[in-house]
Length: 285
Image 1: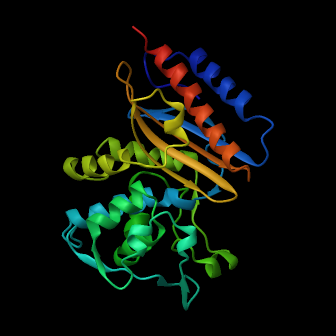
Image 2: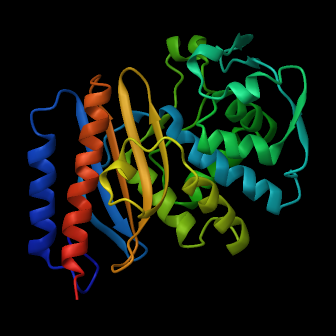
């Protein structure tokens, strides 16, 4: 857990890791945390442990879709038909359930078309499952995997669409780690995945996040952050780029597989607050 930042001492990093441990110890299941900057890794707690990715995979899909736009293989103005039936990774089709989604606006357009740009915003800001599947099916899984590989997030996988329960029952799933999510967000911020205009577009969409109960909830009001969370009955994850006004930017990723629901959200928010407290104190002038 050696820091690569000249103003951060090993003792500081150990103190942060100990504070994380006090918050996470005794929790059921697995709690993973990773903190990094453009310079590299700063601190970790079980960051390589695999978790079901839930909606955090939408971060990689966003990067992949914008890379396709840059390559002129996709256009933001291109309209995709809105539908709820999708191909299963194990053959046949499955039907997505509106009750499991947060995006009634897109569901109200079943049978109509919506531009890719609108679908990307709803995929990120609303964590729309139906928008995600429409975009992911259009571009395919390979560009998503290429985005993960380009960020050196080799421990993350995307093997099926959201809501593909038949594939899930067959053991075909999507995996995320705190390490991989932080690498992906950090590489996006560093301009390693997209040209500058497209990278800023991605971060702008992520900064419009409406689901702010985890990492953003642990930050002081008004703090700029770009984040993408994911949650089910079993997991609560979040990854965020945070830009303090008086300290360097950092990326924090927290993955929890605890089955605790709102209690796990509060844990992620506390880990975010703890990280902010230590980080800003390290860099106080």
